[in-house]
Structures are given as structure tokens and as C-alpha cells.
Image (cartoon, rainbow, N blue to C red; front, top):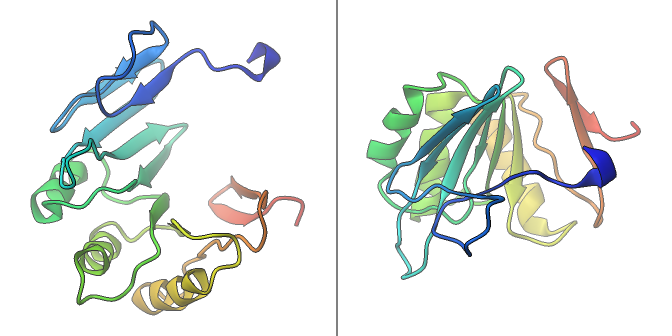
Length: 167
């Protein structure tokens, strides 16, 4: 886009009154236009809006978990109506299945067999990311788990393969 701007913002709750915002207020909301499809799940487990997004664009299914933590046993089958497999997933870097985020990740990996994973919510180079990489690889052998080593690390997904930018 000219100047690197963005013509639209998509949020999973009622945001400030701005014509550039698309407010996808749930518990489940959708948006579809110009080859872009967005599906949300919107729980309020901690008293604030939480949202997970499935974005389908350019032939890809991209899942971003955000801080979503709720009824994944009902919500993941809902998402399966729109994507049988996820290309890229952005999930909390949690593998401990004694807590819900770990159980949720296990179910997501088993259901959607993602092609590449990005653990989130830790600083670049964090030990949690390496633990996630090992756990995710045990769940889906060979899955690329993209771990940032430093702030600003970039990654590129082309032709079904992911790599560090410039690699």
C-alpha cells in the first residue's frame, strides 16, 4: 500500500469509533471481502476481551491464538468447518499438558496438523521458546517451529516452506 499504511484494522471487540476498524464482536464473528476471510472466537475469561483469529488469505490458513483460553473443545470444531489444516499457527509457547494452554495446544496440533508454528508471549531468545520447539516437534515430527533469537528477527513463508528472512 502507498506509504506502508493500512486501509483496515480488524479487532475482536468493540473498538474506538473509527471507519478503519472492523469490530468482530463475538462470541464468534466473521468477515469476508476481497479474498480475505476472518473467523474469530471471543471469550472473556479474565474480564477483558480475548480473541483468537483464523485468517484465510492467498490460499493460506493462519491461526493466531492471542490470549484465547476457553472452550477449545467446542471452538476448534467450529474452525474446522473453515480450515481442515492450518499453514501457520501463532500459539502460546506452552507444552505442559497439566494446564489448559498445553492441552489446548495439543488439541490444536492434533486437529489441524500445522505446517509451521510460532510460539508467542516470551522475549526473543527465551528458554520457553526452545522448550516449545522441542515439544511441538515431538507432537508433529519435523514441524518448523520458528524461534526468534533477537528482536526484529524476520521469517518468510513461500511455496509451503518457511525460513528466516535473508536465509
